[in-house]
Length: 91
Image 1: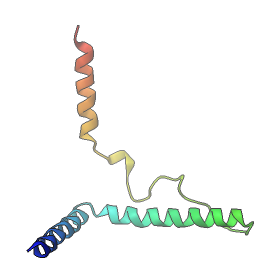
Image 2 (image 1 turned 180 degrees about the vertical axis):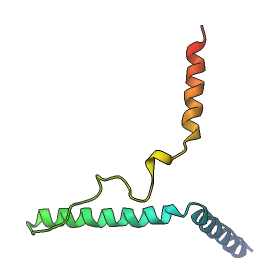
Image 3 (image 1 turned 60 degrees about the vertical axis):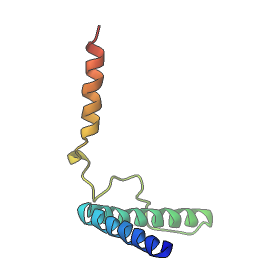
């Protein structure tokens, strides 16, 4: 009985992750971009450590090409701003 419950919970969690991946599809693109950045950083430090010539630059200091930072909607930040302004108005 316990094994069947564990399997059902695992299937539900897996389906939830797949559903979130369908909704937030850019997360997969961002994950690939993150892996590329990590690989280039490891290669950069390896080449620097062993004095090997290289012709690439690590891209971790650049903004993401997948995410558009100016169009992100952050409702929680505006909620906190309104709450903070109301606190300032109180005598």
